[in-house]
Image 1 (cartoon, rainbow, N blue to C red):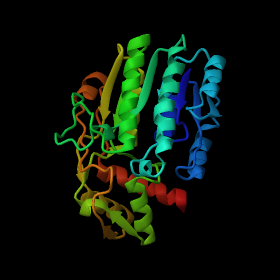
Image 2 (image 1 turned 90 degrees about the horizontal axis):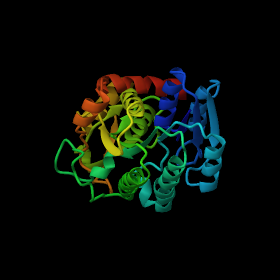
Image 3 (image 1 turned 135 degrees about the vertical axis):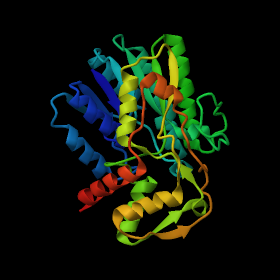
Image 4 (image 1 turned 120 degrees about the horizontal axis):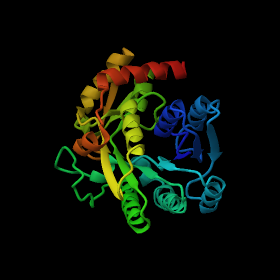
Length: 318
């Protein structure tokens, strides 16, 4: 049995779909917080709940008592896929305590849960490319120290990696952290640029373009990310390890906008702005280790993935 946190979230939803399709029993948990539209989260869950192998529990991962009770009721959990977190770089400037609760306390509670499960074979958790900060060396390699985060979000995700390292070392269970690089695709997060840009361009509203468009992002399609997660589930670490999951082909922001324009058939109205606080100039994944150990090979280009997202967006929102 697999325990998956963040089951109503973007990545968690897609991973759960694949696990259920493969015949796995999944306990999905999510607190359905209001960081973005809860109706979208509930719509994702409706896609899962008809499957007899799926059980959903509305739980906050930082709730120690609830998680202890869940683990006691399900001692046969063999894998934890911990994808729940408070996401978003800019929101961390507005509500820092949400990040401490989900990404620090929540990470600790999940690691405590893991170490008490006698049947546990693997602990997989989500990290982020944000841990690299404003690295001047691209592609970003796992050998970088990552000790200069430029946002609170990045600081909490790096702290989560260090907590996982210490628990794996102390208690001898395998733990794998996956650093995701700008994930996009159908059923995505409304706070992400590809989603908000599509919405505003479709509605004829301006889009805010930071650093006057001089940014580069390693956009990674959701199906490629899911394939990397599933590979990590099947390959337990000897202790703790990290992987980059990215497309490793950064795209200029202006080219990204042009791709959305082509997919929507509309021109963007751009509101050019300076660099946002906590933002980084570039992300670019070195996926050498992911290729070698996980067999990770991203396949979907932005020119293919964005039209798929836009088609889903039009279908979902009518």
